[in-house]
Each structure stands twice: as C-alpha cells, then as structure tokens.
Length: 404
Image (cartoon, rainbow, N blue to C red; front, side, top):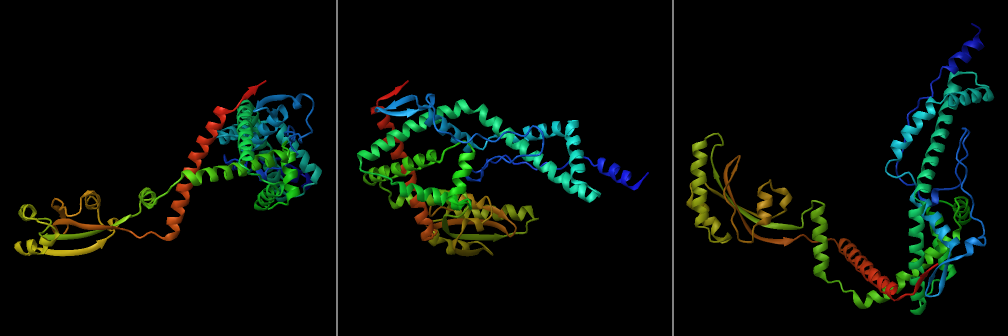
C-alpha cells in the first residue's frame, strides 16, 4: 500500500470517543456572551439581541398604583431570569451524556471530521489527533449550550410569572423610596455595572455587549439594581428604629455556629480520681468500681475530692484545671458537657483502672473580635430581611394592582 494511502487509512481509523467532562454548575451571568459558533452541523443559533419594543410589547400588562408595567419589560426580565439560571438543571450531566452518545453514533459526525482532515490537509496521526480533540470539544460545547437553551425555554412560563411578580415588587419599592426621599442616581447605578464588569474582567462596553448578545438590554439590569439599592436604604432607615441586637443574641449565635462546626465553645474545669487496677483482672476492676461508687456517695463538691482520694488505697487525685471538651474521650466528653457545675459523673472504666470525673465549673472560650463583628453583622442582616419582607407585604396589601 502506498505511504499516503496508509496514512489516510490510519487517520480514518481514529475513533471519536473522547472523555466527556461536564459540569452542572450554572454559568455566571457576566461570563455568558454570544454563543460560540461551532463547526458542527446543527449548532444552536445565537440568542437574538434585544431590540426596541414594538406596539404589542408596549402594551400595559399591569398597573401598580397607576404606574404601568409593559409586556416588553416582562419579556426582558423573563429573558434575564432565564439567562441567569444557567439552564440545564440538576440533570444536565445525564442529558449531556445521552446526547453525546447519539452524536458519536451519528455517521455524519465522523463524515464531518474526515472532511475537516481533508480541509486541513492532515499529514500525520499527531495532527489528526489534535484536530479531532478540538473538533470534539466544540461539539461538546455546542451540545451543552443547546441543552441549556432547551431547559431555559421549557421554564419560560415559570420565569415569566417570576418576572412579573419581581417587577410589581420593584415598582412598590421604588414608589416607597420616593416617598421616603431615597433616590439612587444614574451615576451610582453605572458604578455598580462597572464593578460587576471589572469582577468579570471585562470592560463596561464588553459587559454590555455580552448581555445584549444574550437577548437582554442592560437597562433591565440598571433598573433592577436601582430598585435593590433604593430598597436597601428604605429598609435600613426603617430597621434602625425597629432592630435591637444585644450581646446575648451575639453570644448565642457564636455558640451555635461553633457547635455546628464541631468546635469547642466552653472550657470545663475538671477534677478526677483514678483508682488503679489491672485491666485484665476483672475481680480487681469490680472491687475498684465498688470503691468508686462508695466515694461518690460521700462526695460533697469539688473541694472534697482530694480528701476522698486519700480515703481509697492507691487512689490518685488530678486537678485538670480548665480543659477543652474536645481533648477528652467519649462518652466522658458528652457526659461532662451535659452535667451541671459541681456534679460528679458515674465511675467509668479506663486503661489505668476506674476513673471518676467531676465538673467544677466552666467558662466561655474567648471569641476573636472579628468573629463577634461577623456574628453581629449576620444577625443584623437577618433582622433587616425580616423587616423588609414585612414592609413589602404591607405595601402590597395597601397597593392598587390592576392586571390587564
């Protein structure tokens, strides 16, 4: 066989099967631009750029205290919510794997790859593998974008309802902000857009073009941010009169957070008496256990422990001072934490013999000031959210909302 024919045969034999690396995480809004055009047939079309509203889009759908919400605004906010959802959902990986299996089996997929080899005038197996890898990557990217778009389209009715409700609430927020003398200037909103673009390593123009290419006008973002920031100021003014966070609330939150993280929140002042006995001598262990129980009946508080230890032969008294509960073995740790100050625990078997613990006191572990400030900030945020929800609920109850 001629060398060129052998080379073509080797290239044609290359399988398309490649590892499929997928993720179900939503794509961040600012990272989404115009969908990449793929070489593969059947590539999804790019999103339609936002266009000026027509007559039907200018139609008023809802009146909020006589202030209109148009079909165009709802359409734009729906597109934004769909775009920001990422698409795909929890089953993106399963959908992608099934779709990829179909693509690989499709004879046209390999035909297009072979045509690409000819177009690139591939002369070696290494060149063919590199082109094949890039070809498969583009196919996968196009496929995932298509699946996400299909998922977003399927959820459009849900997004449309959410968009309408969000716009109604924004009208109420901005109306109340105006009554309270709160105004967010265009310059402030522009700074927010600029910060968002910079966090995504884009210029403002690039960011705006990316959003526009996805079918959303940047004015939708501007008005959303304006309502959010105005409402934050309104709630802050209201919350200053209603919210009061005391040190007890802060301590409880710090303790709960530490407990959830498995960290110590207190140090225990512990004393113990050890009655030595060979672990393998069951009779000796039983006698020592009985002695420990007898000592326990005569226990009169932590101050009596040294004298009690002297009453038993070979007994040893240890004042452990303040210890962190995590340094103690279970179940002793849990029993000591549950005991009241001054309590003595039942005798417990240990490697050295029989041990009897007593809780003599406890003290909270000193919290770093930054942790305290963080807890105070989180508590304040929760309280502000509660105030904001109630405030908005009251505004909505008093509002005149007309659906058309």
